[in-house]
Image (cartoon, rainbow, N blue to C red; front, side, top):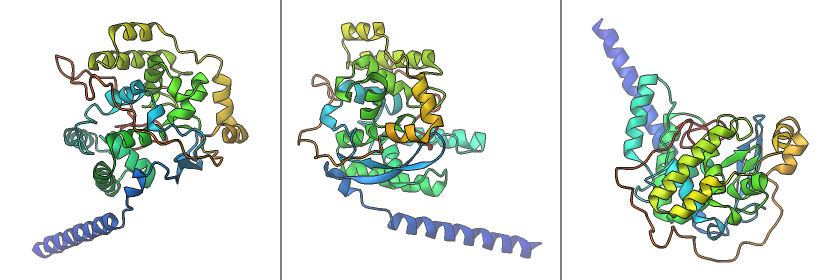
Length: 322
């Protein structure tokens, strides 16, 4: 009996040592993130359509829908921050408290259902990693996120994040999303439209698909607008105007259905179509509202938004879970 226990212990220790060595080697072979600091840099990643097929997608100014930081409305940036990563301007790539809560939740559920990824971690995952839900990938994601926080500004990280998020059938990035849903460039989005797009992020395919669950998307966007008001991003008058505005996304259900059923339409609508364009003009990053660069939380604590299957999770190609 003692011999069997000893053998089992040796085997377990051996497996742990081998796995630790594997993780160490994986970390040593991670790519450099310093190239991302160059705003003219382009890289090609793979994104998934709604039929499960992968397509090349260019991250950078060669993408026809690429929207530089200076052209993204502050309301759009703050909408995703308050909804997805309220501590974005405070943390250094990871949210320790959220990770602890996620570990506790996953142990209770005996699954990897909750990822607790920050916006920085999502950028790292989308640009460099696979979608597998493993401890190894999570470790890589954390390491890359920490490196990004050292090499890049917060504004650059938000710029990258908003240019790769999924917002529809082969609609990736805020530039394509603004054109697809509202027929305008991202720079022209109203606060309501910004909140509307941010509200879709947890699950643009089903849970927060505006053609299937418009009322749910509007309800979540109302919550996001309330958070923007509480943060001081919107004045009381701007908040009231935004609440009164009804996003005009009618008449597009056929496009969504066709995008799912016809590969040709999918290719034509895809933001992965990348003609050669000149890099955007040099310019500074659009900063948070000047009067309040990093707005303090409203009195009474940090307000919350319905999180559902959040975009802070581990499946950016589908309905996503934290």
